[in-house]
Length: 140
Image 1 (cartoon, one colour):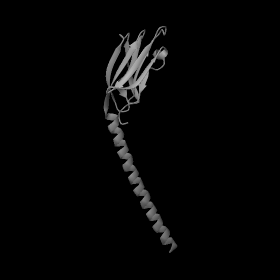
Image 2 (cartoon, helix red, strand yellow; image 1 turned 90 degrees about the horizontal axis):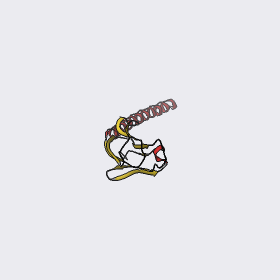
Image 3 (spheres, one colour; image 1 turned 180 degrees about the vertical axis):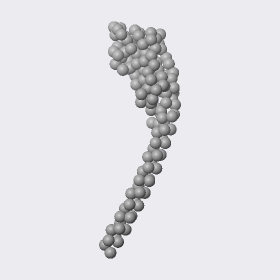
């Protein structure tokens, strides 16, 4: 009798594990589908750089992979400088002014999305301190 009960308990437990795995795989599949939708969604940002003595500006222009974006560069930009780009999914928006000589370098960088400022930084050392980086507004 005890052996029959143990066998029945094992069968029910095994059925529960199989059902749990099936549910887990379905939930995982749905999560992957959601991530795929977010990764494929596009969004537009506008980069702005103002100030003086900026030798170049580097920015994410939309190429490359979401977590390994291609960095584009503008040499000897005329300030104020503005550029609107289309990014996708979880790709962060980023713009970095670069200056070889920081003497008298006062720079502001700004990233906007649909009229809302996502990130803004101002400073003398900003031209070598990383500029502005903003998280993707998609899927948040």
